Amino acid sequence: MNSATSGPDSAPPLSAGAGRYRWVICGLLFAATAVNYIDRQMIGVLKPTLQAEFGWNENAYSTIILWFQLAYALGYLSFGKIVDQIGARAGYAIAIVIWTIGHVAHGFAGGVASFAAARFGLGVGESGNFPAGIRAVADWFPQRERALAIGIFNAGANVGAIITPLLVPALVMWFGWRTAFFVTGIFGVAWLAAWWALYRHPSLHPHVTQGELNWIRQDAPDTTTKIGWGPLLTKRETWCYATAKFLIDPIWWFFLFWLPGYLFDRYHLDLKSFGLPLAAIYIISDLGSVAGGWMSSSMIRRGFSVNAARKVTMLVCAICVTPIWFAQSIDNVWGAVLVIGLATAAHQAFSANVYTLPSDLFPRAAVGSVVGIGGTVGALGGMGMAKFTGYILDATHNDYGVLFALCASAYLLALLAVQLLSPRLAPARMD
Image 1 (cartoon, one colour):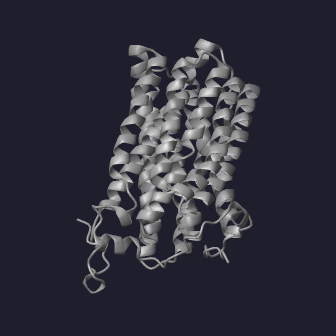
Image 2 (image 1 turned 60 degrees about the vertical axis):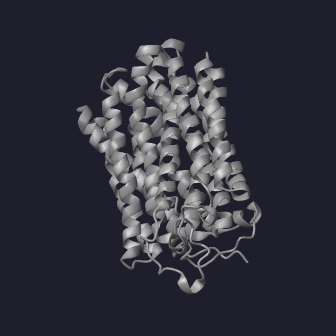
Image 3 (image 1 turned 45 degrees about the vertical axis):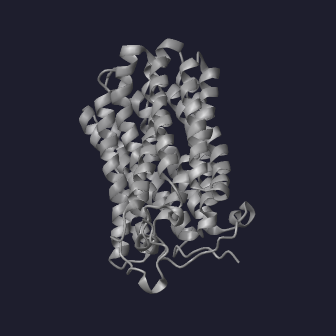
């Protein structure tokens, strides 16, 4: 029972253990992100199969990816605003309906144009995942727990990326690649049913005790006034987040869409054998996602400022990415898995802290919009990275050296941008 009816004198003391329903919500966000990445990554896992069937070169494949990212850029901006207007519950539901339809549409595609159209629909829907998820975290968690909560739900990306190369090749060998899209579309429908049944705002939820609600609301209250894009676009704090996304999101896109092909070509693997190395990379990534959120949250609990906790964690992560520069020179596939896995884990840990910046720097009423702006900027960077990757691989006959060098340097540059644009991570002045 919700004890919100208790009088102020009987309110329980502030305690993290006063209730734990917020972690059920975090679990739902984790599951949604896993489904999101299963649907997103299938094109990468099926890249060798589809290239063989349709005769695509790297540039044609990059065009399909570009259309996904264009939709993602446009949708991210729109969903950020939508979530701020209608809330996480309805916003997330709309997003998953759109992306599930787009995902299933891949099973009917027959060439570059139809795949690009299906990817566009998928991108529009999937762009709602993080604006809605981060808004839900801002509603359900105090500042001291947000990085950990975001790290946990962001780890769903890696679980999805682990499941995909293990499940999809089996579905393809049993039923064909078209049926694989239809079968995996069921996951989105199942999640939507659970979300609609279990999610409410914490102040309205029957399973949230007054003690847990007090814990969620422990931070100083912020404005509930709707904030338009105009004022947000003039804030350095908005561009602190957006610039970091512009620099690191393209690297994650590269990992997601080109790693399967890289393992396939560099180590002469096939549909049956490249799934385990790829899954191992994302298992390592999962550890990084949770560790990155835990590290900064733990530092805050020990008395470090939010500024120090976030940036020290990001610095450690940025350093851990740098060995990927030499990944192409590693002849053993499992040695490469360790180096690439370290880089993807560091990305996820870095990203978990970047995702906390909108809720660190802005009132809740603006979080979805800021996330949307940053996601759009990141997706635009990803579009450029997709075409650049296709051009480089076609021009150099699959030499990944330049691409891995970009991966190695992007996170240090992103941290530098965060430091220059928000030296203290002080909340933006909205007056």
